[in-house]
Length: 249
Image (cartoon, rainbow, N blue to C red; front, side):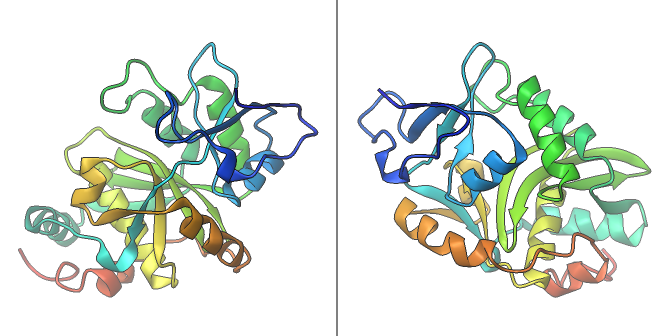
């Protein structure tokens, strides 16, 4: 049995999460609340909420942890070509925090592969909207021809960046948003982006698992760094994608 927390209780050590031989590997505890303070405390220890309608708040700390190392990020030649074409035709704009709630709701309407319904339930939407107002949740938005075509949202504490969810309405738009997030992180010295759980898609982009112990050990130093500047300039493509920005197709 995992512990059920009251709002005044702290999280148990992440090492107490259920193991790989359980029905819910990585489940640490349940209960408490989704306040800004609770969420910041959770992410700072490598813990994240994930639950469905009808369930209490469930808190997880998976082992291993899927991490995208910024300098190992891989883009397919076809996506590089698409970004180049959109940039050169001035059809593409990357907007940061323009409408994070719209991005979160769009992600909620796009369930993860293999799941019925969504894990981004209304209490999560409300909590992360407050987290965005407090400056700890951010949206990276792909706008094509003046319309929101896709995007993602993430949590950031100092130089610790935690990817949450993506969506697209136009092909490749979520991948372009992820590319922009990686470029923004690279431009400001962020070395990795947490992806929480392992998927074949993330692996194809260069993400790889690391142990929970290694992940958690680095968090205090990363969280203590100054916050990132959440703006995106076209030159950010140059830093990370020098063969993409500013060249003709």
